[in-house]
Length: 403
Image 1 (tube, rainbow, N blue to C red):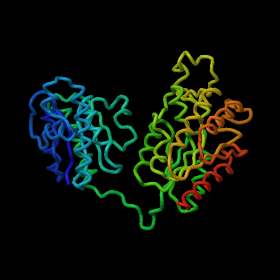
Image 2: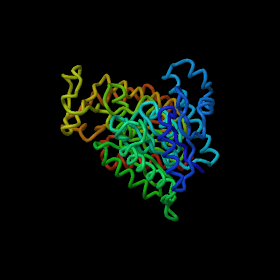
Image 3: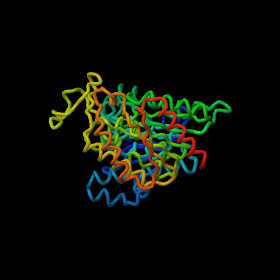
Image 4: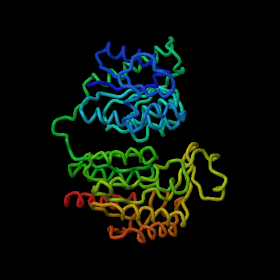
């Protein structure tokens, strides 16, 4: 078992060699992978760039001769993922550590995102104080700010990298938390937003009483990515996707999109799934001043000084419904849709700020027109009514029990 340490050793070989030495002093065998594509490597290298690029089907020499750094970085990222997956499949991998700027972070985190949840992953990056979502995605990657750039060892870099060594050594060598005996209940994943909390909490209670452990994901874009990633992991018995709000952000241009593959994993895996339309009445933006000018005349609700919600129109709701219907129709496995006729969020109900029966009707019509043979029921309830939550949980229990 060993740690794979990804670094562009033509520029960061000294740091990589120092890290390897410190990890091995702590009893953590480490292999340095050279991800460079420019000059010759510095320091100690265990897996050459030739091996790295070959793992992705490329020639290191051809990439270096071509002089296209972007192409070389992308190839190195693919090779890093292949090497990490190969080591993990052979039960040789205890963790992954990466160091670097934009190129090194792209390469290192590509390897990390390819690996299953729970395997230690640490990226020390010059980008860490900015937006790391493109690099972390929905994975369990620990990111540390390098503070200074990687340009040789100094008193600051030694302190930061020393902390990285301690963190990685701790994650690799300390005993991981084990589930208490008898607690290996089947897992169900569900999605929640602040405006669907009452629904999800009641549904989780019903599932818990039936012997299932419920994992709740906050539908904030990255939460939806994590949710889809876990669904594909094979760990789940079923999916209760009550809050599909991220589809609205993807369609309209809000800040909490989970990308175009949201609502696809369960259908691809054939998992039992019950889907609803929680919080599809809203698109998310930051502070009121951040609302794009093209939306100046729209109905908005200031959730707080940092979050502004914009009501989806009937046209947008029809498109969101069509998206839900198409994605479920294209899937496999037991599937069911439940629709709440009296409102899809805490602020979409009688006399609430986003109450819009016409928009709800358009949303439901979009689903009906594209759902194929997927069963769909409309209940004369609000999404946060206990009876709706209980109906959704019971529907999933029925689908799982017939598997």
